[in-house]
Length: 389
Image (cartoon, rainbow, N blue to C red; front, top):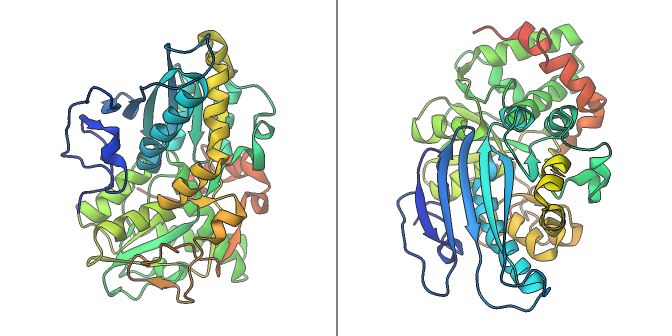
């Protein structure tokens, strides 16, 4: 079976049609046909980049028909595969609606690092980052206008996720919940909360678990200190952590975005299992138009539609197929996991993978990202206090 992972650091050319069904392969290469469409993946200064173009005949606006528009989406680490597929879907939609070819360039990396890249000059028409706090960094640089969370539905969060554990087959360390990650015999893989949005969700989910156990704040800090003392490698982004665990064989457990865990299980069914902890956190990746850039480039219309179309039924189903949780409740229900076990040993044949019998907190429990960032992740914050290299 071909890999569905797009690996950072590789350059490849694909016919977009090969992404459908079997996914993409790091070793695949094909030339574009006369009526086909193409994608390219390359490594840039801030992470890997993917560009997609759709061509063909369609009816649309006479002023746009036959023209080409370029769009740049700066995203976080694990969305490589999702946006490789979504960009094809959107390009076809835009071609049908406007008669215009849209070429979409992707950049991926740790969400916090990506936000800083955009704030420091990496031109993005849209950002699709791991959390609102990272989009705020772009806003605070004067590139995004106030009120961006109201521009699209559900606080501009078109899909959600949560945090789970990926363990080795048969779970030899019997890891069931967050307190198991503090045991001296357990090696943990998680990204760095200083650079990775996913790592911040990981950290807050763990904090909430120990809080639920009735511990004081000082006791919670001690538990998190023990957890991070077990971290084998602190990668800069979620995909790097997946590589450390899956490809390099490091650690006993990967604290992972749901989609990363399911992709790993899908591709290596004999090697891994997913354990869903008793409590976790509702992760709400946030999207935004970068106002200063789209107004300069004249790309506001296509940028806004690009993000709006993430809420369409076709896109919501695609997101679920790549193991993100649709925000459309009717579509989400089509993918709800039918079993009650908190351990998934194989991808369900019926495609129903979303586990709903887990208690999820959310960022409001921590009084929003501004306060959570200042308290936990800013220089001199709690993470700096508890983490010792």
